[in-house]
Length: 255
View (cartoon, one colour):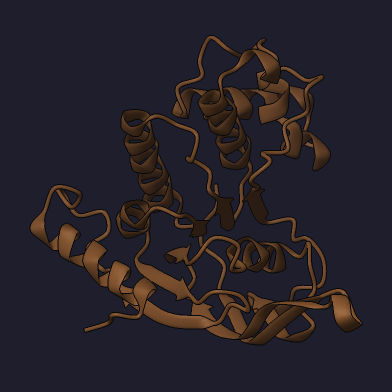
């Protein structure tokens, strides 16, 4: 069981795709920190570089400028202790749901029986019991997203990165899985970073909400949100007020 989260530091990070006339600047002078064990949401205009930020943390991209540091080490390649749910989910169509959930563990050479047992437990946490032998093509979009979440949960990661992990799930199930994410975060103490287009989701899951500008993205605001996880938070007047605060930061109407 993971015993603590990872600390993340972005210092003057810039990223430009391509060269010359075809160069596209995605990020410019992005600087922020995420404390070990913190839950942070990233929000901003569509296409502004939120997903790129996660790819940098995951070691799947390298910055053109500045540095991305996790637990004191500059990120230069994927970390063993990082779990990443990408937008395309990364499910293998020729493997069953159970095999997909166990995939990360098997890549790490965990014995088959142990990996499958942990994957089975993770499937139960996201309400996919009974679908262990199903192929991804036979699952609904929401079920496929839950399967990707199960694969991440099965891994003993200190850092969970999520790129719109609940976007294809109906409203009530989405709220239930948001609660699952909170429960697991509190139980395990890992750091989690979530990209979302939903202000309400950002406020429900993020102890801090980092607000990005349009491309080239830079941080234009950080909204502190210490009430995350409090009983009745979603239904409270304070929740609605915090959502408005994030909305104002997105529109440049900070008060």
